Image 1 (tube, rainbow, N blue to C red):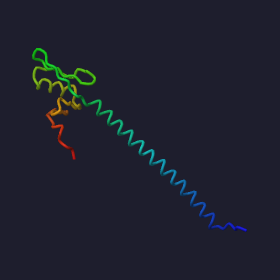
Image 2: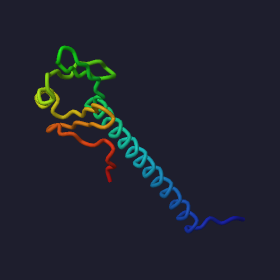
Image 3: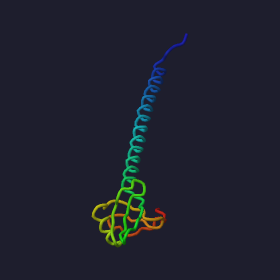
Image 4: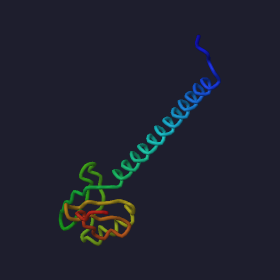
Length: 119
């Protein structure tokens, strides 16, 4: 006949404890991963909201800037300095891709080379 010893019950209890620990750890890990993904989604959404690919038009010596995708009016001016002044007053924390070779980033809006690799 099979005799159940205290050692056997200790072994069973240890298995149960380790299974519970593994379940708790996996739930914490999945919650952490879900949190990180949520943060990344919010960052991407924020960056999409503050980044504008610029469509430039000129009429009668006045330059007009629009968001290429939303067609939202951004700024107008007779000179680049006038447009930069508007950007500094209304679009402080935004990013403007004016062309493939020109990127303007607030708050100073001095040109940044978009082809520079960030390390």
